[in-house]
Length: 438
Ligand code: MEV
Image (cartoon, rainbow, N blue to C red; front, side, top):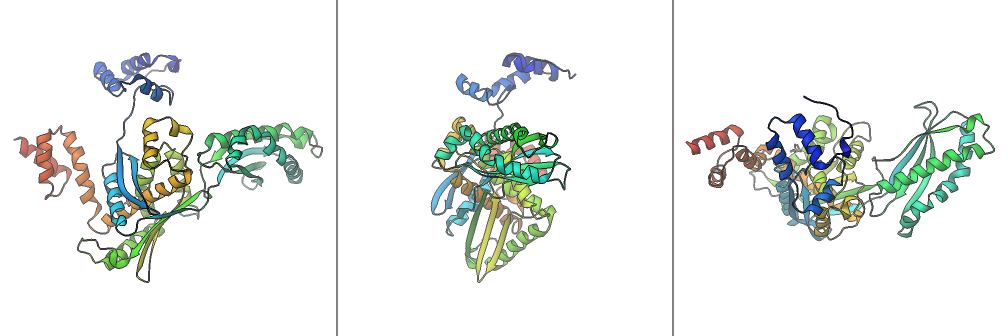
């Protein structure tokens, strides 16, 4: 029976667990054991995790895997990936190896501008507002100096601030639209702090602006927040080779494979139902690296999908071409990532992941992440257009099914052997386990 509780966040961790267990679980002892099983025995490490969020009761594990052999701009990387889906790391590794033998991936950062907005209401004349904005603009920069000082020393900071008239959408609605360069930081706190300072300066000085009469100096700040839509924080990654090098070994000629692959990409470019799944496969690779490197995968997801719909129709994030016998496959996506600040200096596994990537700058990480997305899409389309996706998927999923049935090591080894030459389906695995056990 569910019940409400007040002051929950003030309870100790063990009292929180007692309440959860008493309220929700029939087998209270078993529930308690499971929750505590996932605590780290290193108390300091556990406390670090407890303090990431409020009301932590335990840790939620995801596997951290690695995909080696990624050649990116002639540098070899082993890419860390945190993900639960069985086939993702295997697919990334396979794609990495495939392109390692064909010159690797090329990647470049196109732009790194981030965006934030102060949303406000104002009902007076636009001309007066505009002249107030021009008057106060230097002060917006000046008053934010205590926030921007360090970022400026490193070459970043506020790039510009514009006044945007949105009154066609909502009567009286305007924005201060600001652009930022945050270098190696994702910059969310930096941007939001600047925006809140802009809002304060903008509101507080309005009543002293001589052109405003009392009535039209009234500026109502609605909110100040960064945008996770960052179409000016763009990275591009690409692979290419001669068509004849696309030797699949799958009873399909390189030319036929290249053409089928191209058509699969074309379908995702025109058909939103397919584009969403196509892009989901890309995000399998992207999210896994974003998570492993301590970045905000929800922000990345939101921004990337908005970008996929930027022309009013949801479309593919990757593109392909065949020209003069050259096959080319590329991705262009917005990625606001950080390699300093946030979790990057706190979470021990994130620190290791970044060290494994040779302490990348944010720009380098943008390239690596884009490559992971492109590789994942290559692997998915390669399977889809040749063997079908289930062969590889089910092979990787076999272990999950065996674990569902508590298969022991001997059973696992026998069944893995058996399914090397038999098709994996859920029912075939169940039948094989039963046969083995009888
Ligand atoms: C599954 O997680 C991802 C795929 O569906 C992607 C795709 O269809 O391109 C295999």
